[in-house]
Amino acid sequence: MNATIRLQREDFDAAAESAKLSRGRTDIGALVTFTGICRDNESGHGVAAMTLEHYPGMAEEEITRHVKDAQARWPLMGVTVIHRYGRMTPGDNIVLVVTASAHREAAFEAANYLMDFLKTKAPFWKLEERPDGKNWVDAKSADDEAAQRWRT
Image (tube, rainbow, N blue to C red; front, side, top):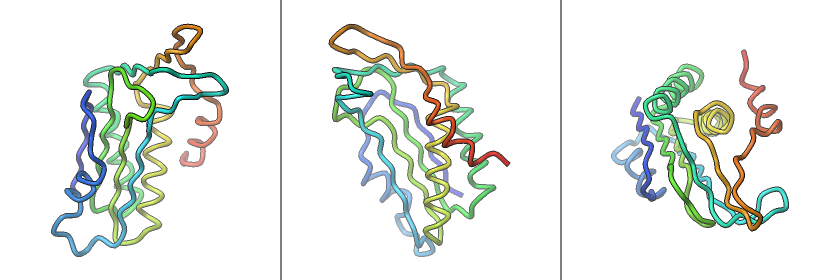
């Protein structure tokens, strides 16, 4: 399986990354792409910017571990995970998950699994800039509840 995992400050091109994963492959029947985007409102308050911090080395290792787990769970032909760090403003891309499989169910399930992991277990921290100051974002119980479905 072809797997690409990158943590970077720079923006990414979701279409180009998807094309790169599937280029020349006639066995891929489904390609699922998810892009997370910085928004200007969170839980009823304005957001001017968000800064994402990560634990270098550990973040890549944890994402790799979960990509391998996704490969063991579903018949994947390729995965791309790109997660940005640094300061982002509303409208900026944050994260990209692309999964490829012969069939759509596996591609969708693997993409959901990887996003649930990234939201709950990946070593990233978010600092929001709001009109009333800066605040570190706490983990959300709804994200933890969503991730529970993957426990075996």
